[in-house]
Length: 277
Image (cartoon, rainbow, N blue to C red):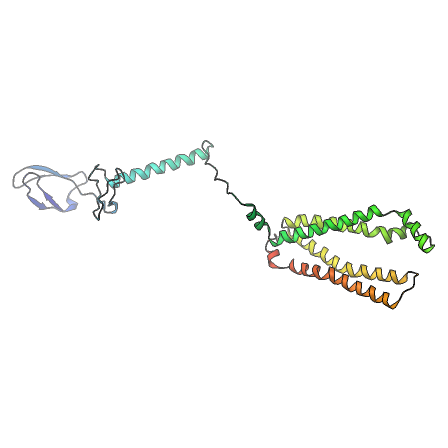
């Protein structure tokens, strides 16, 4: 490294490793003046154009490691700043650990009602709420049928129309069983839908079974009604048979096709992926 006498400006060179960290005393060979030479600091990685202590800026390409305005050593200032930040973070973590200064909770995000509605319109919710509404309608129909069910009045009507005495068991199976089945079936569907909306796999399997039961029950019920109509002691025409058969086909298609499509949709990955398996 190059050294220079501060008295006579005589210059010379000396190896850098020959100068210790605390510096070395030299006597000028020309004027015999004594002076101390300090080992240069390695601050090449801390060259800046703006002082972090006083915000002095060179406003150009000139960079410095010691501020020419306040004299702050950039490396020492930055290291002290990092140490202070580290101590602050450790103190905050210590306060949180002992419950003395819990971090402020994040501000609640404002969600618009439209976003809430759109988020709820997923396949599971759509199927679940649709089946729930259908189940509520079935239960209401069953309850209305039970309110209208009166064994004595039905017996009297049958006797008036046919001049025939029937048993209470016949009246129940003919007029009272179906309302009870509607109430029971609708209730089971609503319970199943509740667990289905909670994305539980057994509820998905149970809902599929209930839908398939309805798909099989509708044509069977219509067939029983047709046979019962045929066995009634009343005159039957060819047109009457044709109308009854057309009604059976139309009603079977009206209920069976949507239920079959729903059964197929329940096996879609959009449904299965959202249900816990």
